[in-house]
Figure: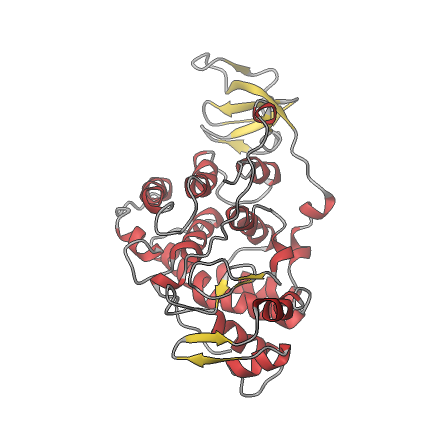
Length: 355
């Protein structure tokens, strides 16, 4: 498959804005969701948060094998754990725990070969991405997503918000997606027109913009029909990689960073604000985040820089953007950088209410 170009800055604001009613005050006052359970085998570092018997605990210093129930106290007590508030266990279905099942074997291998991350890590990244995009952790339900959200970027589609382009998006990635779909479907000479023809949609390229001539009901109906199409899913991931993931991984590795959390943070920024080409894109934010070779120090600066702009330029509806960044920064502060064995933590940091 041909390498696809990086998205331009004005082509990549991908958040779907929808009005959502705030939860009742009583719900807000209920106990927070518990962090992942404490385990005796794990070495915990200062700042790590765990749950034990219906309470959260924060590690005061590096330790292993000290059960929070018998080795905790107030801050400064000298105990390895600082006792926190009561919490309620996260609701985790069997399906939510079967991370690899959310990918085809080919996609799993492709991602592992090209990013070094496995199915559990990518599943958790996508949950963190999809919360502010669709207010849901069930990201696999959005392969067939299609809507004109009124942001002058044309139609927004799929799990990473590919667009067909418009006045506010001169370098859309939707054309690359349809070309990749044509290729994944077996075309020897794949093209945008070939991809459209395969789903019975109509449109043409006008410069870099894919102008769809069907009505929204007709066109989006065709895209929604691709929800379970294996070739469409394959094309989605290949395009996602070429436009956003590849650049994000390169930027992480060039700084000596390779954790799933850092790669995911960069991918989330790139698809929301653009990969490169502008001051508020991933590239622009990285240029203002300093030169520290310590991953936590660098990422703390990066999150601070992103927080300044994430709710501007229609990237997100305030305060959703700040909560979007807080998901990642909270996990970083708690040392959950591998995105492994952290199912409850993912549920906890994504439990905020969309506005």
